Length: 210
Length: 210
DNA sequence: CATCTAATTAGAAATCAATCTAATTAGATA
DNA sequence: TATCTAATTAGATTGATTTCTAATTAGATG
Image (tube, rainbow over all chains, first blue to last red; front, side, top):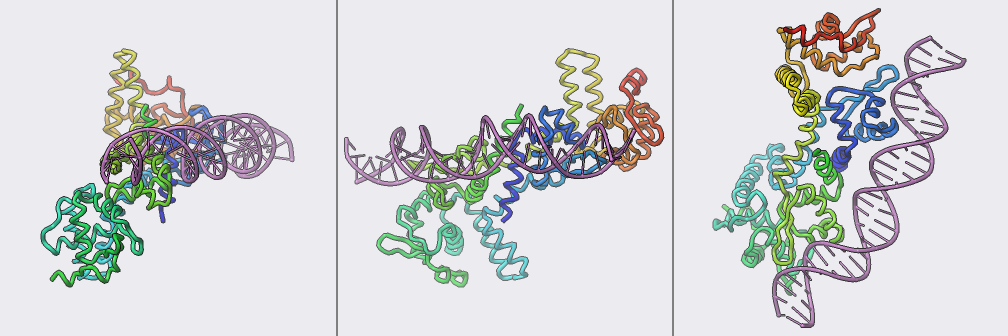
C-alpha cells in the first residue's frame, strides 16, 4: 500500500519548524547553517528536519564544496498535496469507478458498459455524501443500488438485525423496507433473526435484468 | 499566524489510522462503533482520533438518537490540501509583500509607495512558480527585477561563475545576459572569474531611475 | 425508573519526536 | 599536512502521541 508514503508526507508537514523551513526555501535554495541561523536552532536540528523532508520527497539537495544547498521540490509538493484527495476519490464510489476503469483497460466491452451503467445509476441515486435519495422503482436500477449498498458488508460474518438496520441507516431512513428487499433479492439470508451475506452467485444477476 | 492551523491539518493526516478512517468515511458517514469494528480498535481510540480530525476541520458529525455519524468535510479537505502551496507562494514574492505591509504600518508614504510599485513589477514579471517571464526592457523595471533576484545571494560570499550561472538559471535560461547585467548595474563585481555581491549602497538606486 | 447502547473521560504504559550538547566526519584550502 | 567550516552522528532530555482498560455520562426506550 502507498499508505505509508502518504503518511510520511503529511507527517513531514505536520511540524511548525519544518513548515518555516519550507517557507524560507520558497525564496530559493539555502544551506543548513543559514537555515539554522534564520530559525534560531542548532545545525543538528536542521539535519534532523532535512532528513524528514528529504524522505518525504519535499526537498532535494546539491553539494557545492562543503556546503549543501537545499531545494524545494516543487513538482513533488504539488503532486503529493493532492494525494489524500486521490485516495479518498478512489476509496469512494471507488469500487464502482475502479471496476469501470479496470474493465476498460481489459478492453472488455461488455463489462465496461455494465460498469459504466452501474456507475451512472449510483451517481444519480446517491447524494455526494453517500445518502440514498430514494429507492429506485425500476427493478433494474433498484438491484444496482442494492448491490452497491451491500458491498459494505462482509462475507461470512453474522449480523444481528440491529446491526443490519444501523448499517442500512447510513444510506436511508427506511431500513425496514430495504432490509426486507435485501432478503427478497437474495443478497442476504436470515435465520433466527441473524443475517448473513449470500455468496455473490446467488444475487440477482445482470441476466435477470434483460 | 495561521501556521498553527496548517500544522494541525497536516498533523491530523499524518497518522495511518486516521487516514484509514477517512478512506472509510469517503464511502459515506459512519458511526464510532462501526469504525472501531472495521479498524480493529476500541471506541476510545476512535474518540481520540475523531477529536483530532474535527479540530482540523476534516470531519463533522451529526447525532441520530444515541449514535453519532461522522461525515467527511470534503470542501474543507480540498481547500486545506492546497494550504501549503499557498503559504509557499506567499512566502515567495513574500519578502516583497512583507516590505510593503511594513512600510504601510510605519506610515512611511514614500517607502510604502516604492514597495507597492516593486511588488507590482515583480508580480507581473515572475510566474507563480518563480520564473522570470522575460527581462524587462524598461530600465526602471529591469532594476527592480534584478534587485529582487540578487536578494538570494549572500553578502561576503565569493561565487564561482558556474555558481552564479546555476543560481540565475533558477529564474531564467539566459544566465549569461543576466550575469552581465548584474555586473553592469553594480549588483556584483567580478575579479579573476570570482563574483561577489556589492554593498547595497552601490546598487542602482531609485534616484537613478528618475 | 431501570436498563441498554454509544460515546466520552481519566489515567497509565509504551512509543515516538524535537531539540540540545559534545564528539566526529568530510571536503576544501593555506 | 594542519586547519577551517559545514554537516552529521550519538546520546540524553523533555514532551507528545497512540492505544488500552476501567469508569462515567447521556440519550433512548421498555
